[in-house]
Length: 288
Image (cartoon, rainbow, N blue to C red; front, side, top):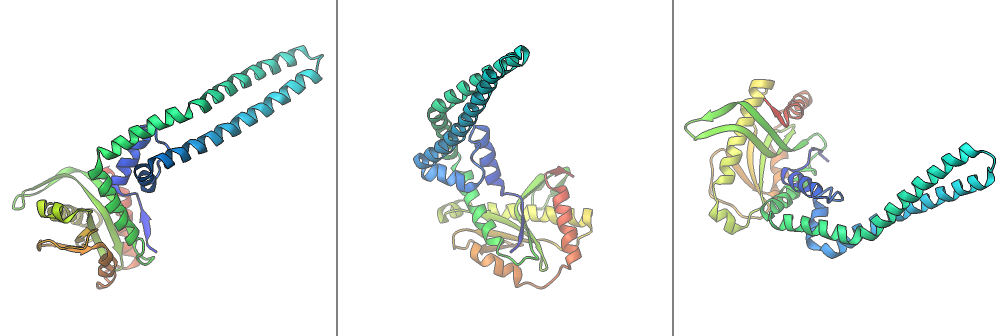
């Protein structure tokens, strides 16, 4: 099993936005799928879980209250100590009242929050479907042998833009869905979870994108890490169809991806793999 670093870009974006909206229970794409596919049951499960937590807190509060009351009744002589205990008792009762109010408010408050989150997902379906595609490919890549690394969502800003006038490229940043590093080299992978209709409408963009970003990665690793091997640029589709040929870019159905990667010639030693991964980890999300 390959070692995986980082979450996919669209998943990170979706989950981050939903958590900011108050959906702190959303931690992975499976949670977003449950929210969208089985809204009523998912909300009911979260509400039940939160109610159990608050019920447990109320029970502990009741236990503390009873202990303090017992201490007050048993120690009638210590006036100062009794005064402190009564203050503690008052705080405990106030906190428990707040917990009881929270308990009553859980259903309405959470349903509103989750509806807001569901609206956000429905208004951003392109990102949602992109996240699904990236997750499908990431789960496939993790099946690679253990001497391979999968770096999801590699992103850098560039202090000095990369310019290619012949191809009309002007890059101030670039992002690659998956960078695979292993004995057979480096692979820059762009995932498209597109329908055939979408592919026919927007045929060349995915190819141009990974061609540009793969070239940018090639320039950086050669200039900054002394790694001369050029990343193989791959456009992966979650649906099994092919587009027209595009130079420098291999197009693959995702189930054929691992075989393509592992069947190539051995090019990297263990030390070169570690050197490449060190570069990716250090430079990710940086301005270089």
